[in-house]
Each structure stands twice: as structure tokens, then as C-alpha cells.
Image (cartoon, rainbow, N blue to C red):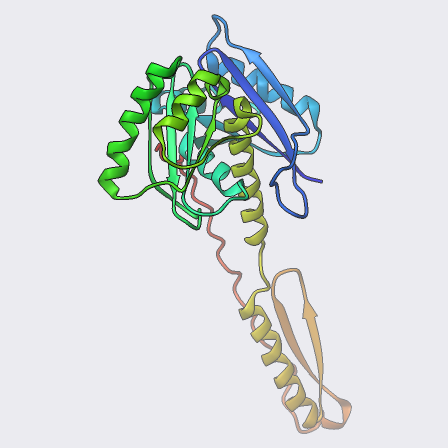
Amino acid sequence: MRVVGGISAERTVVRGILLAETAGGQRDSPPLGGVRRQVGDRAIENVVAESLDGLAAESRDLADVAVVYRTVTERRALVSALADGKWQRASHVSIKSALLALAQDDPGTGKVMVLELLDHHTAFALTDAGRAQTLVSDSWLNGVVDAGSTDEAIGRIWPLLDAVGVRPDTVLVCGAAATDPEIAAAVRRGFAVPVSEVADAANAAARGGALVALEQLRGLDSEAPQPDRRYSRVLLGVAAVAAALAASGFAFIQLRDHTTPVAQVQMTPAASATRPPTTESPALPPRAVAEPATQDPPAD
């Protein structure tokens, strides 16, 4: 069983969860465990590293982990802090990607807006009807703390929807502030569509990061090396030559190492008086292997 993790770094707290890969996908899969660390007066990137250690301590099967960031500055700090340590291979996922993963994990249909509400930050992403991509998204540092600030956030969203001419069919609300009854009521007033709260709303962004990590693992599975067709064609060609030579009285010996086939032709005693000496075909040159290019993921 493979396990993935997600980390969400907020202003005052870092949250992390673990999810197990299941045969039916991750939908409605409860977290295996999690961590919650208060930031206090420490640098948030140090608390993130501590939280990653906490996830690893809870599961030895941790195959991949994604850290969700909300601003370019935050992303740069996280990448720099983790670059030289044991978590240098951790993925860095934008809040937009995490919200899209949550939308794809939802069992509903139609265009859905996932709205994250924190006391210091607001973000949303609206998907297409198939929930394959994000049509419009935005995030900003002003958070929501009451009905008034929620109305202001919704007032900022509507012009963006009007600009692209799309409307959500449903709205999913997440984030620690989404559990406040006054804020939840303001969201329902602001959108004339069904509004529901994501399960475990406070940890939803961390879950979105874990879902992205899971998709990355599955992507690596699908990119597993396939049999080399050129190698197969060489073997078929050698077999055809062997058959033709055998019909003429030659014996065929195939020598193979871990990279290239080498054909060696030897005469049988009956043909030795009239056939040329043993010849050996040259080995195929080894294929050049391209080193994968490393690239820092772009900030959204």
C-alpha cells in the first residue's frame, strides 16, 4: 500500500495529512493520520520541515508528499529551505492546483467553484463541467473573519466570473474560516447555487496537495519503460537471417549481453569445405540516454 502526504502552510499553523492509495481511487477515503503544528514566532518553512518529519514518522510507506503554497514569496522560501535537506524531492503545489484536485475528488457533476476561506488569505478555482481544468481562479492576501469581509470577497469574485462569462453550478467551501456559521451563511447569500462545505474543511488544502501527489505517482507508473521496438526488430531480423543460413547448412549461435544482441555465424562440418570462414556481425552501438531535465515548477 502506497501512502501520500499533503502539507498546507498557513500563517499561524501548518497542517498535514496522510492518504492511502486505494483500488477505487481516493474519493471519500479518510486520512490515515496527520499533523498540526503551531507556527508561533518561528519561520514557517522550518515548521513545514518539522511537519514533514511528523508525517514520515507516522508512516514508513510514505511514497510522495506535496507542500501547498499560496504566494510566490512563500513558494520561494519553501523551495529554498527544503532544497538541501532530506525533503528536497517534495513537490510544491499551488493552491489553485490543490483546489482543482478537491473539485475532481468531489462526486458531484457540473462546473464547481472551490472557495478557500482563511483569516489571512482567500482563494478560489472554478472548473469546467468535466472538472478537467480550471476556467478562472484567483487568490489574495485579505482573508475573511466575519460576514462583512465575506461579502467583500464575494464581491471581488463576481467581476472575474462576469469577465469570462461563466457561472458555477455548485460551490464547495473549505478552509478554517468556512466552519464559522456567520461566514457560511454569507457565502450562501452570495451565490444563487447550492453551497456545501468540504468534509474536514480546515485540512482540505492539505488533502488537495496529497491528491496531487497521488496523481504524480500514477503518472510515473504510466511512464514506466516500454520494450524497445528497435531492439525487437533487431531480434526478428537476426532470427530471419538465422533461418536462411540454417537452410544453407550454417549453424547459428546467438550471443547476448544486457544491452545488445551479437550474432555469430559458424559453419557446420558439412559446409566447411565450400563456405567462407566464420564471420561476426558488428554489435549495435548503445543508445544514448537523455538525462531528464529538471525544472522548478512555475508559480501560479
